[in-house]
Image (cartoon, rainbow, N blue to C red; front, side):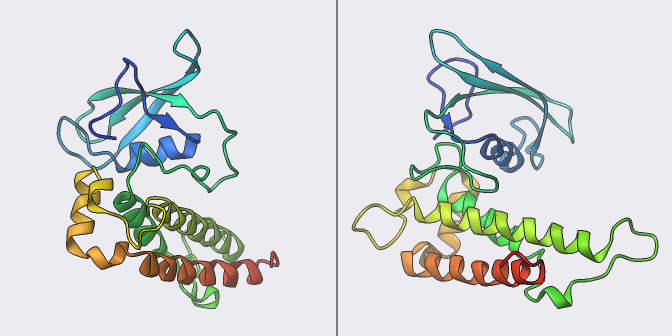
Length: 205
């Protein structure tokens, strides 16, 4: 997808509500280039153009309001934190998903037993901290898996032509090898190992 989805069709297809949320979080404000937009109101609309979501978002930095419309995918939304089915995203490119996966994974201790306990004035318990980390690494796994969907059949890497966002292109240009299938599989595998450790500690394995 090039440009931002406006209120006139054709609209990009959203595969889940959390894919829309991720899109807003990773989209700089068109006015001040501030990081991310916050949804204020979400409406589900129907009409001749089909069912769609309309997001009204605001920039926390400059207060600019934006409206984004997304067509709903025909297939049911997957369970959170997965972003969608087998079809690559039309909202976020592979570079954005890789950045999201890396940033979120960096907030999670690789060993659950090394997780920091909340301070005396913090709200939360070790169980809550573990649950939060488990959710975060789940998002990282889901985002890393999305990157692989951009590798064409029979190809060994995500082509640069498959990226469209400034952030995604910057990530690709900084390290093209990271977008090779073997590297993406290695990244996904590493995140899944951490996810398994947290599931084991949480009694979910």
